[in-house]
Picture 1: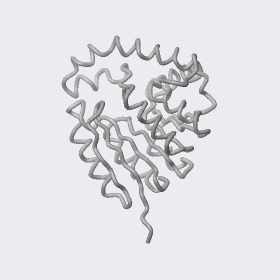
Picture 2 (picture 1 turned 135 degrees about the vertical axis):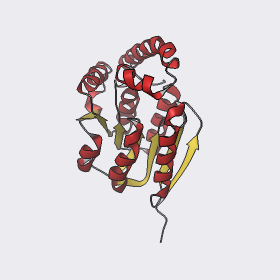
Picture 3 (picture 1 turned 120 degrees about the horizontal axis):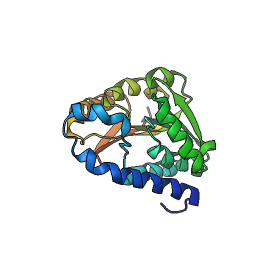
Picture 4 (picture 1 turned 45 degrees about the vertical axis):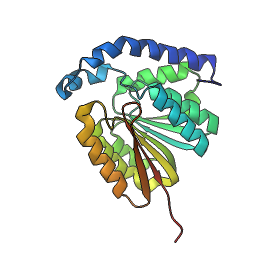
Length: 213
């Protein structure tokens, strides 16, 4: 990623090396029950293409209030925090697992991006009630059954031209029913337009566009 600090690049390389060691193992997990047993030990990142796309969208939108739902071990957090640094904004990163968040905190600090992140630990649906708005960008990448409950809470806080990127719409394949339910839900919200993009694991990109009355 261009125009990033040496600290950012060092941490990104750490994630790349960890992911390389996990990829073959992940490919062997073909059913949901297998994934559920080990999911909390894996990075399960959005991938560099999607992470970079998120940065580009945030910077193009000049988003100042950025929300990450599911920071996990901090892979996507690294990119979103870099985007927040570029726009002078703040990333609000939500995670329910203390150990995962602690790891993410350490890596973001090592990348010298800690001032750009506010950490939120606990049930995202409950915590989002206190999320400052208007929210200009959201990355949805927590457990898929939480997508719609989270959407219902943050949608009223979503800014005009606010963007939502929802990951894992197409892969793993066992996520497709929940992905389809989410896509129907976001398209049913007033003022929302959305498109399914078959890149990475499949993302849904949605925008709130208020029309003049």
